[in-house]
Image (cartoon, rainbow, N blue to C red; front, side, top):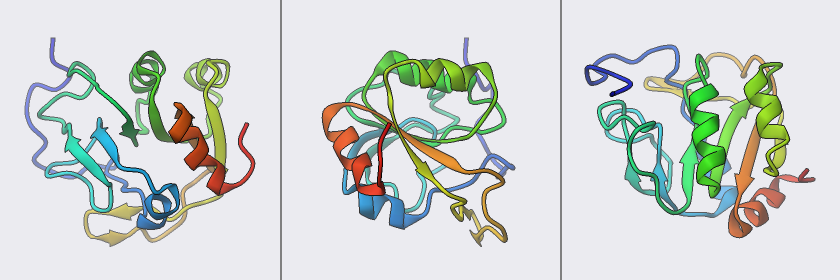
Length: 152
């Protein structure tokens, strides 16, 4: 069963793009962006993009993935990320069960304080409502994460 019945034709409140400086500091090229907007997100150094039309939750994931999932419902994305076990995700701080599961999964965490996201029309007018986390699985991904400071 597909997660989405129709392709994305409008941008939504979940369309927040990761700023370029994060990718510059990570200095990684990902094999797959699993939650990309139509035509891929700007700045994401990635070989392939899965959009809503591709249904990133049911499509095959391979290699090192980048994941900035819809914050309105991160739970299924986080479960799939843990299962895949290689890549970097940008996620909000949360009291939700999904965050506790991720915290206890063996993933590495680096904190990002109040980053400014991009929208389809440019810089968002305010900072993220909470601090965000870069979460990584994989030797190269965790090493790249350490460039942001202390890693848990």
